[in-house]
Length: 283
Picture 1: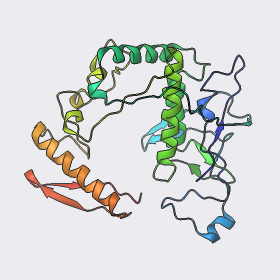
Picture 2: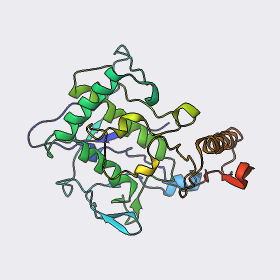
Picture 3: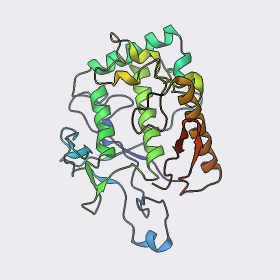
Picture 4: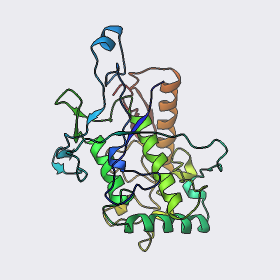
């Protein structure tokens, strides 16, 4: 277990519910733990380890990919800010029910669209605005911060922080959306891409007049194209073949997890002589 500590930017105007400044939220001061690619912590390592938290005043441009330099730094990052401890919600609060995206109804889509539209139209100084939340993901996934007591960049990809950090991100994003429309039960849908019925981009993202739409999406991946769960390059397979490959990929991935094989990177040969490889779980 570890303690979750959050940062919050003190806005010049107001502190927003559920938000503070999302650019300052981190998986906290984990004293005595190191940020290891393989997640192995030894007693010797614990004695010499420093906090894995970012140096919040060290923000700098970073690479979204090898040829793309981006600047996601929040305003005023040069000034250190106090911690704001996470407050767990009341266990008696309304239950949020998450449904698969391909099965949500028109009323839900309209409600979600409204919340997202409000979020995208907020002023930039409001930390709840969609672009600031997107920049938060950019900050921690591209190495925009250096680690504390070091000039080494902090990136949550390929470390044990990956899943809890993204879960935290979704937690607050969901509650901000609900607060914008006054719905304490609002829950994000999930993409059920591991079953045949859900192996396409959800329809709500194809409506060019909605808040879900983005002009930069690759239209060749939109419905009726079946998603390639082990995507490397376009294969132009028919849906039936792509579904078979996806199911084999999910089966092998699940088998690796159940066998607790951290270096599982084998594969299986199925129709069309295509080898379905499995993500390197050790990374």
